[in-house]
Image (tube, rainbow over all chains, first blue to last red; front, side, top):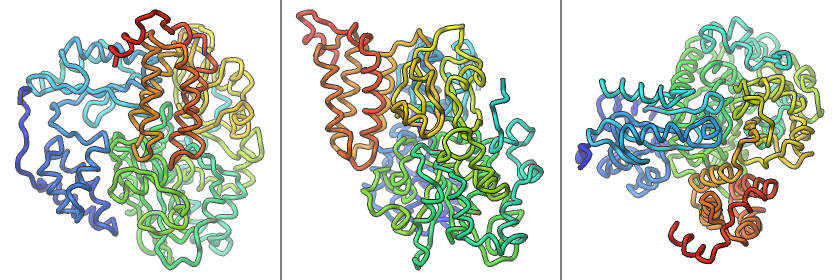
Length: 167
Length: 438
């Protein structure tokens, strides 16, 4: 792929995900409840949900592949294509907008030269704007992978990007 | 002036390690459970617990405000099927961030509430549905569940009694609609979050086709306090209508000096909350409008807000809803066209797509708002928009999402119409511009 991200063509759970899946199986009386969980595990393993992983999840949870595909395309957190190592997600809903989230989006576009939904050529950063993250009292917020960065300013965001570039 | 605050659910928030079981126990945590199961077990029959919650006038804190005790009483007592208890922690209504505080900073409160509800409803299994973006809150809840199992508050034969209750988390994956209880149930069944037609209601046929109660995090968190101090004490905490008992967590954001989550008695004047609790409007600006209960509740002008009382009845009196208690304060600099566009964009993005009026209608609403944002609105657009209500709301769809879109967008247009009219383009080639804008 042009942005240096590799498509995954073979997949099965990592050892850690396999163990967690077995734990989760004990907690739900119906296996289909594990579809969303399994997809979270896939993303923890490889960052997105390729076709092969959908087939794998279908087989693990006893549902059809089209069921899994329907779920993947329904929920916004499941990435349909590879994303960068750091996924910068800027909330652009009302409270974040009132407190300057537009400037955060501009800072990312300026600094990394990518638009919403795009990934940098080195595969390091993906940028998305997202809906309300429930951080309105400490807005604007940027979610980077699992972490919230609250009361963000363009300056602090640029510093954060510089820091992540070094990692 | 923080003295309007009444911190009961938030009593531990701000203390070091407030999320730990030790801190919760030090402030009397899990004593309500002990009362029910050991010390006062003769008094606290399942029926008595439900009656106490009914008498407390606790109403669902997720947004709909349905009386909690009444909801519990709908669970059939003679059903041979297992009964499920669900905690709705899919906090996503724009402007709302109170449940995040409970999940992250004081998770044992609602966990104890769930165990008590489990005993009252003869449920052995509860699930906590946490929005996928809440990774840290989810970790905290997982830790809290582990602690509660270790102390014997969760598991089989709690305190050696015949009562058992198990809890597990479920992570959502980014879908606002899953805050609607039947969509949430579908989601726990591993499906797309499409709301179900009702009836049957979840109390009769919910998760895995079994009787199910779904309550918000804050609702469960109030339960131990009601058991410990009594329904009368709880209901009299509020200063307004008798029908709205207790305290409420408000998430206050936007143009105020001191935004955040505040717990206050129900029934205070909105203006006191803005001025005294939140330190007034930023930069000494004037108030323009308030979205009172999350983005789905009709906006109030500054004048309406000045008269509004913050409880379920008080909000109804000014034509809106208390909703989730998410107050978004807007000052005089706010561009109402941009506001309406952001709101419309959200609903278009989050419509689940199941019902045609909502799936298509939300796109039309957003497209119209986009034209005004771009300064190429047309003369008849605003009336057309207001007309959509009859096709998208009032029962045209399976769930209330269609109503929510209309309640969110139309009042902004109606109450601030001149700002929209100023973006009308009367030039001859406007059609061309509209087509070009897509």
